[in-house]
Image (cartoon, rainbow, N blue to C red):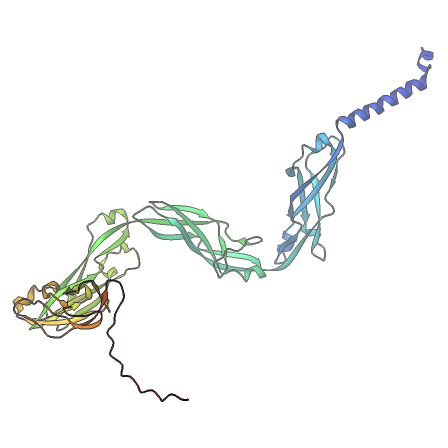
Length: 428
């Protein structure tokens, strides 16, 4: 038996070696060695407290991401993804030049040897003094509520936040705010928001390496229903003897208010009393609307006052204000048009008569007009005439400037003739 084993021993050994070599060749052919590069692997910073404990902050200058090349069997390498790598930099090992070596680990255990190379990458940081300050949270909003609803009180909790960051960034901070987004709400709501840093121009600042005393701010928002209500002006008393109240004008005649639904269901109006007792001249007042509203409702918009004018005139006299729209045109020449040169001008006229004739007199009753009979194209100054009711006379004259224009559009302005001046004798 021994002789059989030992017979041709070297051939047997050689066959084993050849078999092993063939096996290695086959394995390498079917699963060859390959390499693959992974980019932008995030670097985790460790032991930040080493910096913060000495009241400093750091800002990463470079090295926050690393490039990793893996060399190994294709069957393993091709199954890898960026999430299989763990890159870190330990700030406790920070050098005098504010740099620290990056370490990369493969989280999966390979079936064969694998070479991981990240090129001795380093993380570089910039250090500076930490500054802290408290800011009041300013609430801004964007978007719209449902129709007929108004934004009410908005309360932030906490309403003061402490901000800590590097000195250079801190100098850029103007205020801290949150933005509430409105999307057709019709009832009160409460939401969480992240604080935002703003510079003095209202631009948003990067909050990297910034610490807030609270990472979220809860904003409670009131949504109020609105309603349009009328405004009334009532006069109190009577003008002095021999004087009368001609008319009362006021603006606005309606306003929009907001409040709770139950409060708006009530019959609400604004009633403003104006005292004209013993008045001998026109009474004009600017009245604050909120003085005549209950605390449960508030005014919507910028209108906060009512302008009131009570025209008071002496008995037997009335005053009116004429504009070009109140003046009729008679005897307009053919093939001509007419324009008032000063269309926005206002003309005050005073009429007199017995009280019965003046009591119901209106501007239209005066029948104001201008007569263009016999006029040529050009600029003219005309006196306004009237068709007055019986017993009424106009106390003052009013003249208006008009321009007659030919239908072709050319204006022939009537200018005074200029006297010719003598010319000098011609020279030889």
